[in-house]
Length: 76
Image 1 (cartoon, rainbow, N blue to C red):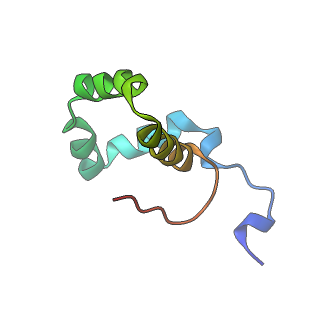
Image 2 (tube, helix red, strand yellow):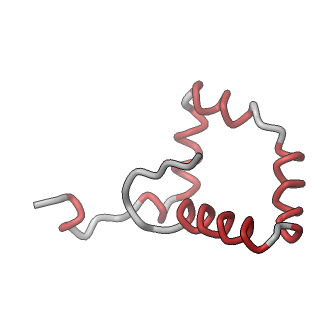
């Protein structure tokens, strides 16, 4: 029997709780604060300039990250 066999709430149902918990972790907080959020937004805004091949890969990665599928994910 696995945990998934029980009708338990999922963490995705409580995004604020997850974020608060993560930000209380010093290692995670330093990692999150270390990014230039303005530059990251610029990169997201430039996705319309990707060529077809780049767009396919970008969409696959974003879908994998945002998707509900379980399992380890590794990107190079």
